[in-house]
Length: 96
Image (cartoon, rainbow, N blue to C red; front, side):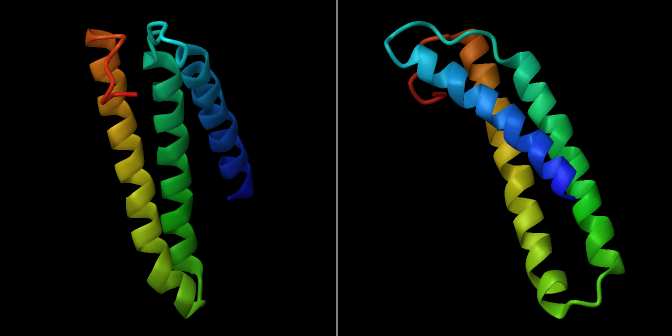
C-alpha cells in the first residue's frame, strides 16, 4: 500500500505546483491529464485498501478504513469536477 501512497503523493504534488504557478492571476492550465493520473492512483489505492480490509484481522483498521477510503474517493471526484470547471473557465475561482 505504501507504493500506492507514494505514487499518489507525487501526482498530487504536481497538481499543487500547477496551482501555485497559477496563483499570480494567470489562467490555470488544462489539468485533465494530471487529474486523470491522480484518479487512477486513487482507484488503485482504494482497491488495495479494500483488499487490506478483507485480509486484516485488525478491528480498528476494519472499522476506520472504509470511511477513509470513501473520503479519498470523494476528494478525487471533487478534483475531477474542479478540473472540468477549469477547462470551461481557466480563471474560475470556485474551481481553484
